[in-house]
Amino acid sequence: MFGYLKARTELLDEEQLRRYQAAYCGLCRSLKERHGQFSRLTLTYDMTFLALLLDSLYEPERQSGEEPCLVHPFSPRAWQRSEYSDYAADMTVALAYLKCLDDWDDDSNPAALAEAAALKKAYRRVQALYPRQCRAMEEGVKALRKLELKRDESPDAAAECFAALMGEVFILRQDRWSGTLYRFGAALGRMIYILDACMDLDSDTLYNRYNPFRRYYGLDNTRRFRDILRMLLSDCARELDRLPLVQDAGILQNIICVGLWTEFEKKYGSEDEAAHGTGSV
Image 1: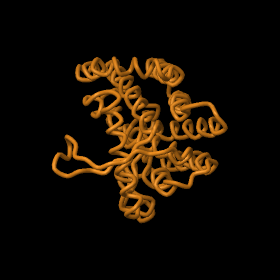
Image 2: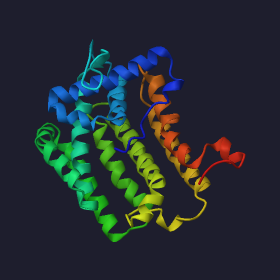
Image 3: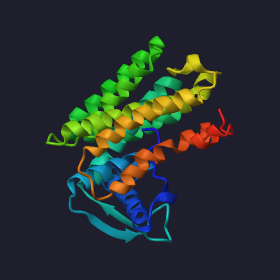
């Protein structure tokens, strides 16, 4: 994904912070064991969110431990993982592989092509395990590519492509929660796609890349973007509230209700700053 699904860690209590960091390290461990050392470079907090959400919903048995790693060789780190950490690791690899191919198509970036080649075997394994999810990812990327080539200026059309992709990623198996998980994932996908378009408007315009908001470039977009994102966020929060989450609920709510705004507020200023006329554009 795009790197926006991060907690505001200063708002977590000590127990929540330990759990959040352990889940992140558990995902890293799952990546290594399932797809090798190189795959750890694809590690994101976005997929840590997925692992936490499914853990909270299904409450599986967890493995835990403490050990050093390549990034922290002299200070052992606590980790926790479950079957949902493994699933999140597989989805991490699949999304990273397809993003690399998309970056190659966009910019002819040789580094992206090399990374895709390194991840190809892992992606084929994930594809064999989860054909539905991988098919949705591939179809979503193709649909977005068509809109980009047409220079379609409809933000809704582009966001729906990513929504369909994300909806399938959040469903590991068909059960009583599948519908809600799909709707939540789709709502989150719309939010993330639109947020990323807002964040990248300047650079996309500069480098003549596709962005459905390019017609707004040069205008004071802060209030417009904030209103759109607030509406999309309310859809995410509504679907999240329909899931019976207890374990890690505080962390998940922190990420959705506060953490998702972090990068936007760095770029455009907070609502308080806007009220006092000190926000940036």
